Image (cartoon, rainbow, N blue to C red; front, side, top):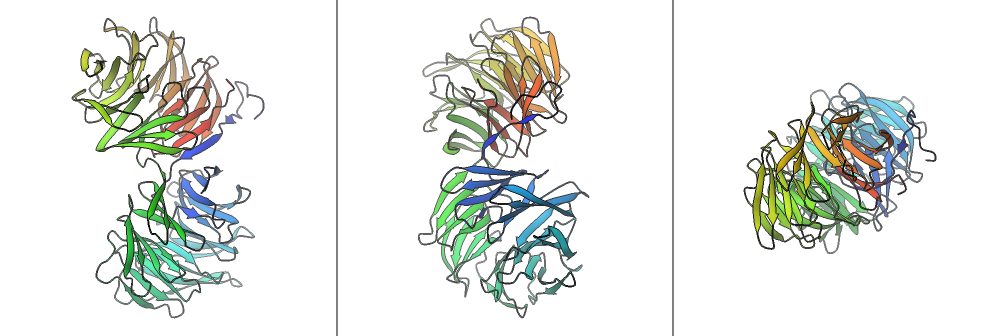
Length: 621
């Protein structure tokens, strides 16, 4: 990326994405162990992530214009295919990727609205794709020609939607589709460019099929159902041979199946159970419980080890022999509301979300600590400058302080705000906390060794306080509110110094490090520069084309600042020029907050879909 673009340049430099903490556990079979046994493949937002199993390397496949809805890997491991969702009536793309080169080979567009499922034929000749409920067709593609061969409606008119696919293990011309009241075996007639389905008969049983598992020799296949049982069907006769368990069905449905070399089945459920069952009579041998409904089961190699992905964004490793779960990756599965670095270190940061605060080790993207308060939402966090506590703002109106090493609760300030605490900041001498609430009040708390005293209540805002920043000398602070005002307070005499008004809901505010100006942004998409001395507007920049700007941060020398918001883009700005120098694309949800780490090594941004993205800071300091 040599040569910075001038002010008029359209070719903006891209920010380099270094790491992603995030796993969308809601995509069925979204986690896949690559045949090389060294990597995982999984989608997050619009990106496909290839992650090393033993080391923390990550590679990213960028190309989708909307959220990825399904992924498949060919048996040889040479190809990856991924499908996306798009807007009603528009064509949804399938992308075929070269795994080794990590590059896009072809875009395949025929289906409308959403790609539901993808499957490769055993010898990498064909890819079969299934459209979502607004599309309802199944299409076979030639991988060599990257063209469609033929298509057909996926299920009979009398049946419901097909949602799952599986290719035969031995023949490139046979695959199975299934869904709500439909199981079909398809044969490809290549000379006539036709696919011909045969309905499988299940007698009186009416089931919604959630997953398919083929036997290695294709003689039979299993399907899992939302009712919590498993059906076995013969490939030749297309008839059901048996089903089970008859008495104790799996609660919340079977979500994925693995067939082991021994003939036994690994079954996962919507209730978070992973069970080992005898293939002959579906008898339970062993079972474990994981956190969240299971959506992915994937084998590593021959089945001595397999991996489990859950809706709560957890990834577990299981060994077949011990059948004990080991949590290997985790992330937030709800919107993240704040991110903060401790003073002077870039190796740690904390994030907060619904139910929890988590502390992360930046170089390894590992979760070091999780502080959980069930059924509560944490809106904002700050590290005390001395590093002895994390202070946090909660929707039950309490301020809670925890130790950063162990997560032990140090103290609680009850009834801090009547409509929830929405913003929080600590002075650098660690003697005071300033909090903002949903009712618009700004409160100053004196923090002693064992005492917490309310010093003053500042009542000027008439709506929720969204952001608080304190001046270096601890004598002044600025509060931004969604009532359209930013107020600069004297926190020694407890008076208002200045009020800034704009026709916007302010979401974020920053002091310029020289502390003669502030920058603000919010729902009007404008970035405002303001004079602190008299509150006058200096300049107004167009911060984004669509949607609110929710977070901003400025470098310690004030040369650059970063913004992020509902347009999913991270933007790096030159403060004096008022120009964007770099843009980061990778989020699929609205960016809620972002920070430049101390020492300007990284930018870390967090979003409403629970993803944490770490970017390389683009300017040499």
